Image 1 (cartoon, protein in one colour):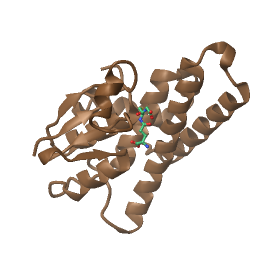
Image 2: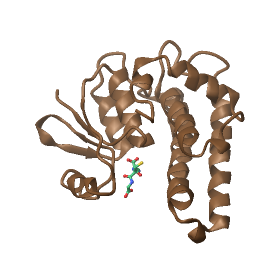
Image 3: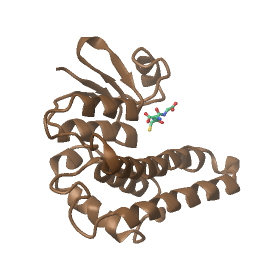
Image 4: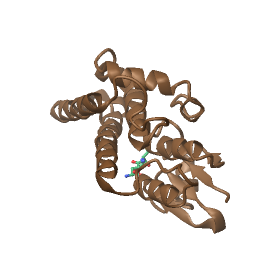
Length: 206
Ligand SMILES: N[C@@H](CCC(=O)N[C@@H](CS)C(=O)NCC(=O)O)C(=O)O
C-alpha cells in the first residue's frame, strides 16, 4: 500500500497522521507543502480546499480531515496496532482525550493566525484572551488525564498519548508562554515521546 502525506510537521493535524502511520509501521511519502504562498495552488490540486493533512492512498483516492484519515488508518490497521479501542468505554475515553487535545490545537492554530501572524495594530485583544483561556482550559484537562508515568495506552502509545504530545509540542513551538512550566505531566509525556522514533522523526521543527 503506497501512501502520500501532504503537510508539514508544524501542522498538528498532519503530524497526527504521520505519527499514526509510523506507529502502525506504515511507510509513506512526505510532501511538506505549505498552505499558503506558491504551495497553495499545488495543494488545491490534491485537496480543493488547499488544506492539510491530505493522505493519498493506493489507487489515488484522496482522504482529508484528520479524524476521517485516522479512522481509515485504524479500520485497516495491522492486527493489534489500532490506536483507538474498537468499542466500549475505553474507546469513548480515548476519543474524549483526543477531542480535548484536538480542541487545544484548533485554538492554538487560531492563535497563530490571530496573534503571531496578524499585524499588531490589527490584534483584537479580547479575542486573543479568549483563545488563550480556551487553550489553557484544554491543556488543563489533558494534564488531569495524563499518566503519572508511562503511556495512557499501556505498553504502547494510543491516540490519546499521540494527541496529548502533539498539543503540548505545538503550543510550545508557537506560543510557549502558555505551556512552559505549567503542565508537568504533559511535559513528562512529551519528553518520553521525544525518544520514540515516530515522535522524534516528526518533531515540529523538522
Ligand atoms: N479540521 C481539519 C483542520 C486542518 C487544518 O486546519 N489545517 C491547517 C494547517 S495546521 C490548514 O490547512 N490551514 C489552512 C486553511 O485552513 O485554510 C483537520 O482536522 O484536518
